Image (cartoon, rainbow, N blue to C red):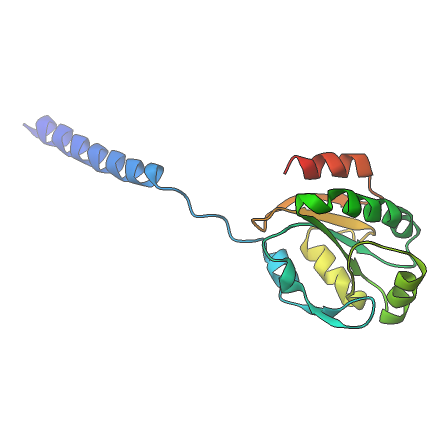
Length: 174
């Protein structure tokens, strides 16, 4: 009799557990919230290269390539024409490149005046290093580039000068 009660109890508990598992399994999981680093960045309003304040929230829900750079960083400056050409090439694909300058407003403005960059440049000053670190750049090196899906999830990061062909393939895979 004792074994029968145990078996009945075991079957009952198993049925309840199976029912709970099935109810959880059949539900569509909620979409993941955007990465905290992206939420923090998009909450900011930064000056663009012309000095006009821009809310970064305008990039919410878009596929983004966020390039952290500085005018004093030779690899950063070297990759920018290729990034600019890539932005022009991918414009119809709803992929947006933005540059976050870890530099002074004066230097970013002068750089923008000298070079025809086809994507928006924003001035974050040295505080931009903290944003870069929040996106996983623990070394603090530049350039540092982050690909973000339209769902706000970080898809890939790149430290150092970009291989534009690799970046293009990664973006087209989105």
